[in-house]
Length: 235
Image (cartoon, rainbow, N blue to C red):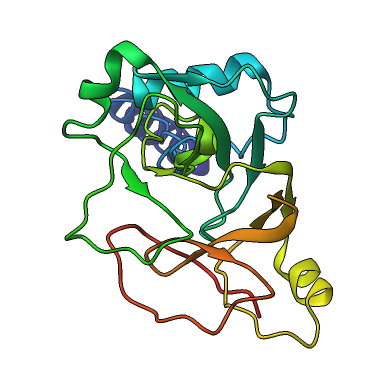
């Protein structure tokens, strides 16, 4: 076999091999790997509102807690304050209210709030009652992302005999500074400073309830656990 015939055979063999390969399925392009998708996170809680309280917001909070049994007292030019009164980092609302006279029986029957007189040691054997002419201070504790405006914010203390003049919020550091050298309590949050019958004093929360501090007569306090949550202590 001469070289010419050999080249012809090689050419025919190569063509046959290529023809056979053309019958196989074309290779499928490999799909690009799917990029990692993290699990969607829950929407973060709405930050607490720093908006100044409006009377309409305060009235809505009073309605939420007391329904139609009590209303914001219209006789006070400044009838409400906002602060962290029980020291749990949520903003609370303190508002002066009056009971609706026609609802006195209902307001004293199975209330969802705690009625207390901060100026008298609490004695569960001596139940308190709301009278039709009472002027009361309601402290509605904040809850959730919206603090005292939150629809679930219903935890409330209703305080007797502590509505005076010139009500204002005072934080712990200011309180300690203003009463340097005196025996003082250990409040858990902000205090409400005011003047009652010419004497300045403070409403403060400690462990279980709200108490009254008179710098001239205070001798000390006894701590007791209570049903409502508290928070940090003033150092």
